[in-house]
Each structure stands twice: as structure tokens, then as C-alpha cells.
Length: 249
Image (cartoon, rainbow, N blue to C red; front, side, top):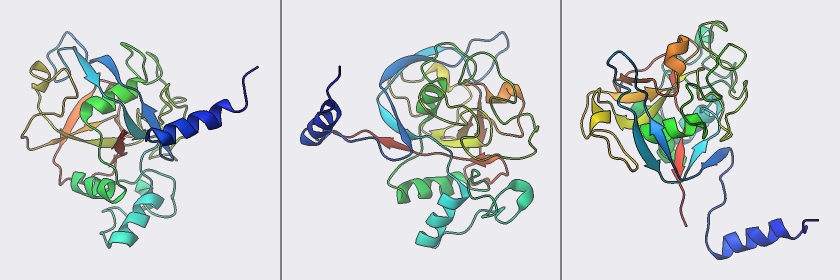
């Protein structure tokens, strides 16, 4: 029989050696290697497939919600999102647990800094979305339907975060619901020269990478490897974000 003292003992050791415990509502994404992108018949910005190693990091289990973003706005006197109070976009306190939308990359970045976090890199995002499932098209495997994610306009808008099953890393809505900003600049040919260890995107670009697709997207756009670029100043009714945090010792 396992000792009841094992867990407290491990927690003491963690504190003694300065290892950080997992922050609330975040998941520890372990260090690992994965195949990023996908080789397909037609030329695309998600090829060639390439091996990437990612250091351990924390990632929000859920997309940032209207409630959380409002707290940030109150605390910092930041402007409310573009679509605040528009029920057709489920943006506002009538929908506190829905993902916030109508925020630019710069808005998302400022929220992350306020929360002592950051936006994930594109590679971190894809690695996390895959949940340790090698070569799969979606966060929970190769099959997708509307009982597993919010996409294809079936629900006519965003749903509460965490409505569907989490992937094997404990992350929700990595496919559908809303697109998510990442920290990377977008480059259509970046995968041809990408670093094999903790890539951070090209140095310059007019666009930032968004990932994951949304309630408004078709099945193609919510696949793990699918990528798109958007002006960092743009705000959209189907784009939100989640935050990452470094693992420190």
C-alpha cells in the first residue's frame, strides 16, 4: 500500500529545491520532441514536417474568458474589447465564461504581462495541442465531429470554455471555439528554416500567427497543424487567446 506521506513529502522536496508547482488553471506541458507540420500533396505553409524539441512550460487549460479580461480592464484601465456587449458574439458579462474576442495581439500581450504570463510560441501551441499524440490531425485523434469541438457554425457562436473533453495534456478547446493568438511572427516559408529547438518564428513579418480555428471555421482549419496569419492590430469576432508561462527552478 502506498504511504499517505508520499505526496506531502514530495511537496516539501519541491519547495526545498525551489521547483515551481503548477499554477492554478494551467497545465504543465513536459519537455519533448514532436513532428511539427504535415506533408501534404499541395504546397502549403504547414510543410515540410520537421522535428522540434520544446522545453517544458505551463499553458492555460482554458482560453481567457470575458470575466478574466474584464478584471484586467478594471485593474489597468485598459479599453474593453471591440465587441463588448454584443450578444451575437457572446462578448460581455452576459457570457462570463465564454472566451473573450475582439482583442488584438497587442491587447492579448498586455493581458499576459499583467497576469505575469506570456503568449505561447507557435511551436509550443502545436506541441500542446497534439497532447502527446504523434501524427494525429486533431487534439484527440484523427476523427472530429461536433460532439468533440465547437466548429462548423453548428452552435452559431462561442461556447463556455471547457465544454468539450480535454486532450491528453489536460487542455480544452485547442480545436475550435476561437482562434488563438501566438507570439510568433508569421512566415509562409518559415518551416524551411525553422530552428529544431524552441523555435520562435521569423524576426519580421506584417502578421502574427493564429492557431486552432474557431466556431466559424470548417474542419480543415481546426487541425493541429493548420496555421494562419493576422495583422497584430486586427480585432475579430472569432479570435481570442490563452497564456503560457515559463517553468522556473
